[in-house]
Picture (cartoon, rainbow, N blue to C red):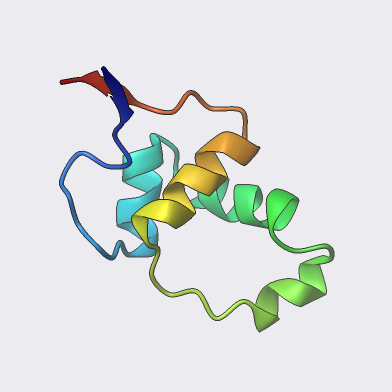
Length: 74
């Protein structure tokens, strides 16, 4: 049976730098991903109150960016 592993550490909240590390990108790249996939205009970025990310946020960003989701076998 295959299950999708959202994160390695089982954390419930990630800072911006932790989220970037979990996705394997720099903080700048994470911000670019958010600009590309979450907000329509750069001005809207100031209205995104995200200071922390949940595992589901990381999965969605991973999928939107076309990154492979981590898969583990149990």
